[in-house]
Image 1 (spheres, rainbow, N blue to C red):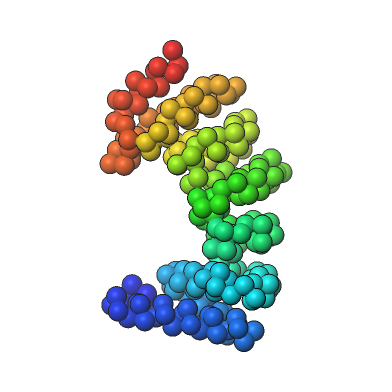
Image 2: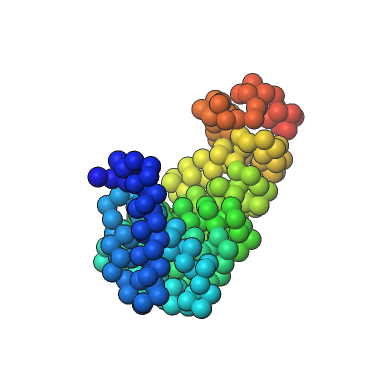
Amino acid sequence: MGFYGLEKEQRDTLVEKINREIAEDIRSEKKYHILQYFADEDTYIRKSAYIAYGRVYLANTKLQTKIITLLENLLDHDDPKVRQTATNAAGEIGKGAFEIVQHIFDKGLFDTHHSVRNAVIGSMKKMGEKNPAPVIEWSRSYLHHADKEIRREICHGIELRGRTHPEDILPLLKELQFDKTKRVRWTLVHVIGQISYKKGCLEKVMEDLINWENKELITDAIAEIIDVHDRYRNFSHYTQDEVRGIIDGFIK
């Protein structure tokens, strides 16, 4: 039975068990339970495991070096679920101490399995929300990587920070405006739309966007912004008609 097939009380008991057994593994320098939970088929059990791992790191200063070393070892495991969960655990740590786990993301970004690379993106989002400065600087170093998929993943990974502070990521997005790869360009336009629809964001996006050099991209991005405000109309600060008026004001 999956995690959400359990009653709430049963779920709480299972989470307590995961927390306890992962902590015990780390203290005894074993990884039996860690591997068991990190490789579980259920997404939510793996999530409970990587959150527990991050909590042990925060609560045990003397064990932190061993905790990071164990994560490094797990990144070489044959099972991509283990590598994925280890990357997510590094993301929990990176919300407060990105520099300690940066090398883990340097490696995970090039993993052969898409789920591990997606864990890098997901971790970038949650770290960028809590600890943006070092994550943004790290992201900048990969913006022009020769591998188009790396560029796309970096663009996607900084999105969440942009939803509340678009000014933080717009300079990075601008550097991708002439990228010729279709998937990178599509992700760039998508992210511009995603960072435009919350209160106080549209004006910041448009003020920056209208000064970009790639006029074709600007046109596509504006179309996406307008469309996003319809698709997410229950969450958008402005109506679609209000958005058109605001955009017209910037263009004129």
